[in-house]
Image 1: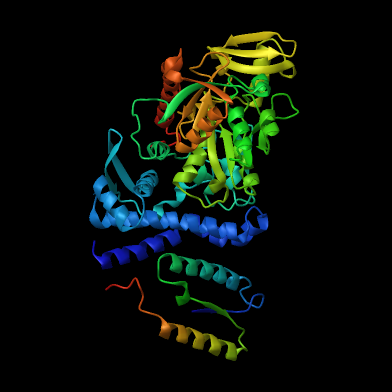
Image 2 (image 1 turned 120 degrees about the horizontal axis):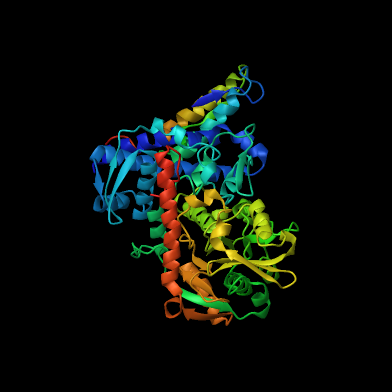
Length: 481
Length: 75
């Protein structure tokens, strides 16, 4: 590339990035944002510049595409080297431009063949970044990330429903930017999780290093844990080994089976948070509470892991992102509104107050009552009450997590564990070495991996179908490509 | 170089606040793209403070003289 072409392109890119309304909104509303108190001036500078940087890098790539025509993967690599960026970042921007309509990305068997600019102009982009309540609410996962990021604190997520205070909203589009249901570049996320290693294409459970079946050896956890008590044990170990100072998860409130976000600060807290809560809970909305710690773990459902991973791909500059050292994902077929949980208990012939433990296993929904009675119903009857919004999710096994845990594939009293990243491996291996987990390989037991892959296929298949149906009716659907 | 009224003394009420915000941001951008924030500055003085204005202009002139050519200029 000639030097002068490059410099002109750089200035143009800076111009477009500075014009980007997502950047301008934060600059123009600075006083209102600081008054709202969620961010300090320094936080806001960091966020504004992080978005500027990402817009700048994006428009630089766009300028290069317009100047040189389509770029192949090799040329992208060369471009990345010239701009001192990683190929990963360049590809992530390419996918962002694809979503915004600025470029198209052609792929063949999961490999990018070329990226080319479309005829769209940067000034056409504004309508894309809307409030999450418009366009995303029917597919809202209730993860709570929008509430965590909102600079005005005007987004509330409660029981899987998101509401925005129109009076204070400045339409900055940050909620939409971080939402895992607006767009989520699955292949880029898989790449990040796999750390550049080859991603198995036909497997429904994402990329991983190893898969196990595990069970806790800690007696207190065995009493309260859901299946193998693995998540609680991992947190228990992380606190013990000083790997984390706090962890974010969910715990039940005084209202029976109503969960709330919970910041754990000790091993005792981790045990308090044990056990699956089936009612939807906006765990991530409590992320801002973690900023005073330097190392934290987050336990959550696949949608929450997607939201966190999306922030790794497209940095927003919020300080809580750097603190999340471990993303512990749980398997999730769907979740329920609180009302549905109450109804399920009634359907099974008891009341929500009387339920001591709930579980889904071997195609049945179980409730153990406080009198020790075990009630059950086929899962199919129960899932009719599940949240419709959850059918827009393809991910059963928390493919974006560092380590994923769930009952599917393991015998009763055990949990399947999918170790995906070096961070996840470090945590899991550490807990095993400390003697806190009993382990066997998932491919050496029944029903094992085939069962997991099959059920994950049901979920992603259902999601594809739902997205297809909705887009045929011209509905707005999450973009996962 | 941008010159505005002192805060609270502007006829346009908050125009100078907005200008300051934009200048702060513009300086950050200039730094990011390698042009350098010292090439832009905002000063504040009232209509009666000619000495301040002269000092500001002198300061900018001094800066311009000491600056190397625009690093992004076509070569």
